[in-house]
Each structure stands twice: as C-alpha cells, then as structure tokens.
Image (cartoon, rainbow, N blue to C red; front, side, top):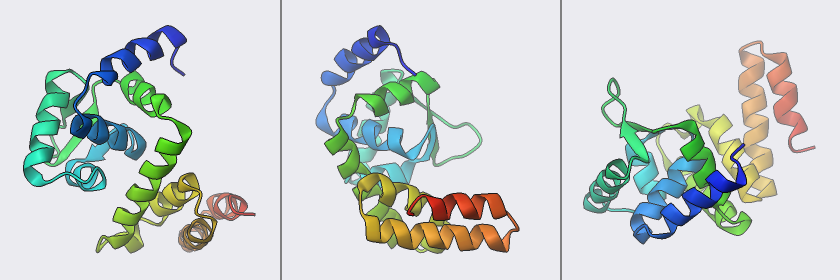
Length: 159
C-alpha cells in the first residue's frame, strides 16, 4: 500500500513523462515487479527503437533497472514504484492495459505455458468469457501438478 503523500509524489513525477515512457511503465507495472522487456514493449505498442528510448528514459529517472543476470528483463527500482504506478492508473486505463496485455500474451507461441497470466489479465480486463476459459485451463494445469488448492482457487474466480 502506498501512502497518499507518496502516491501524490509519484503521480506528479509520472505526469511529466512522455506518452511512450508512461505507457511502457504503466504496462510494466501491471506485468509485475520483474518483467520481460520485449513483452512490456509489445504490450505498450512500441517499436524496437521506441522501446529502447523509453527504457533508457525510465532508467534515467530511476523508475526501472535492468536485471543483471537476465539480459532481456527489467525490474522496478523498488516495489513501491511499481505499486504507485499501478495504483495511479484509473480503473478504465487499467482495464484497457490488461486487455492489451492479455491479447499480446494470447498471441505468443508460448501462450499455452502462460495460462495463469492469461487468466489474471483477462479477469482484470473484464472479459468474462476469456477469463473463464483461462481460469479453467489454469485449474487443469494445477490439477496435473497435484495442486488441488490452486485448482479450486482458479475455478472459484469465475464462479
């Protein structure tokens, strides 16, 4: 949870960002504390050049850092930065970002390995049909692993 004062500080800092940098950071905040650079850029609708520039700007502002051991990954400088960016999004903006993330994930060749991510993002996007589909797939994946509690939790999300 971010305090109101800290949230206001981040809100003011983010308000001055260029649209592509703000889009990238907002998308990344919904992907998680650690995120894949290409995935974040694709979900934000950035070209390779635009993504490179946006990442450099976000790094120079101290919002994100490059992961040392994972060449194509970044993380937020601090978890509070991620939370402040995520919580600063309007509900409609958040829903639209989640829908875009889910659509991009769904088109990836490794989409069958991302059922939990897909379920999460379709739920947050408010697409009940797709959320139900991926929650059921996540539940089936959990059952195959013997994780009965997880399977029940995925099924309960769309009940």
